Image (cartoon, rainbow, N blue to C red):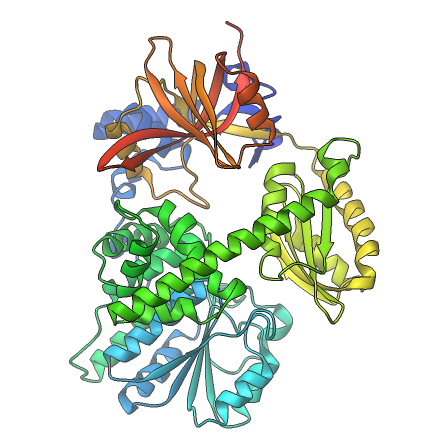
Amino acid sequence: MHYLSEKKDLPFFLGIQQSATNKIWLDRLDPPALNNALAIAQKYGFSDSLARVLSARGVDEIDAEVFVNPTLRTLMPNPSTFTDMQRTAVRIADACLNHEQVVIFGDYDVDGACASAILARFFTSLGLRSRIYIPDRINEGYGPNAMAMHNLAIGGISLIVTVDCGANSIDAIKAARIKGTEVIVLDHHQVLDETLHKIDWPQVNPNRPDDLSGQGHLCAAGVVFMTLVAVSRVLRERGQLHIPDLLAYLDLVALATICDMVPLIGINRAFVVKGLQVAQAMHNPGLSALTQIVHINEPLNTFHFSYILGPCINAGGRIGNPALGAQLLTCQDCMKAMKIAKRLSELNQERKEIETCQLQEAETQILPILIGTEITSSIVVSSKNWHPGIVGLIASRLKERMNRPVLAIAIKTDGMGIGSIRSISGINVGTIIADAVAEGLIEKGGGHAMAAGLTVRSEKIAQLRVWFEEAVTLAGSKSEKKEALLIDGVLSATGVTPWLIQILEKAGPYGVGHDAPIFAFPKHKLINIREIGKKHISVSLAGIDGNKLKGIAFRAIGTLLGDFLFANRMNIVHLAGNLSLNYWNGYAAPQMHILDAAACKI
């Protein structure tokens, strides 16, 4: 989210200084950006809307044509620029040529599953049998642990490769090395300064302090892909004739890049664009099976990865067998893949049911805040009945609804609480949790500005609730910023066509660091408003000429936006949102994802 203090020179869009969701609307393009958009449109013959979107995202006229056609050839970094890459590539090549026993130690989320599967499929193509080990989220926690690494090492394993974890796992890695097993770390998480000097094993990680590759935006699957590019070079130099086709793994790189919410900049744009093309060909039996199980009957896109396939793969790590995701993505047997996909889909449905129950209990705890009789800057909820794998989702849902930082804690039978925090822009919960660790309020914790995790003793939760509220209030008072919705341009229901949406996709893929364009629809009438399920709202917006556009407001029921829409049934209002194609019975119809609305003077 953007703030007024960051965009002081931009005019209020349509004069809106307070929308339904208490935001101001600003024109995303200042005069220089408008001039750049005009130059892009004239030079390349792009539509005005596409030119505005490109310019608003910092694309210069000179780079526009290359930007809309991202390729691996033009965006691929040199693997040798990564610290420890050559040493890592040589060691992995040795393992491949010598047919060593290798274990891949991965994380239990989508990125970890994809990164593990890519590496395992590469090894399999070279005739090397490897084993994937995914730790249990509840019993083992995140990343390598000393007991697991020790047990793997004494089983005769010569090499352990950690993916999407291990950056700071000093003691766990030493437990394996003591038994004579070598360890390589392929990660993208921040390496603490105090642990860097203790690392004497290969670690390829663009976010370690001494890495100069400039590729810190990569997810773990992206790091693995870059590593395999280097490994392939070493194998060729040694006369290996059969080298696996790395491009075949781009579907998994794209899936991980999208689901791990890393910035869609640089090589990540090419990963996603080319990866979606690979995914649409359905060469991966696991992805193909899951796509069939969840009834996706249209070309795979970023929405499917983010909101349908990704959550299913994550479900195993949240409430089921954490290895199921990696098993699905490495499976070559179509019948077995269908069984795993069905199980993951069932777990995801179970996860949704658990989430609904836990969310209802959480809402009961904060009823005074919901009805407005109590005003707070933050929310802390906890329960002995909650599943630790779901608390991050509870925090996310409450944050979306209440627009303030939320900490949700599941209290285990041993009295230890596992908590997840989701924040809003302007409140850095990573810093807040670091302070809580320093003050001894929590056992451990960490994260970044928008999300964090922690472990806290149940008897300290009440104290933590008070402390957290004070910390968030202080951070908010220092911020003194007002939320703004940045608008890319103006459209009408009449002007939205499948052709326009396809043109706008040329500036994609959209996601973190490269957000989807937001268009304003001035003076449109709200008609045919209805609830979809218990969460979403469907509307039709009609322009002055009577032409209509279908719109949907996700998870809007019970929110400020939802209340505004129902209160303005058949009224003329201003609306703002993203555009997409909704596929139904083989027909693609334009659809608006409503993000905000505002009253207008007729």
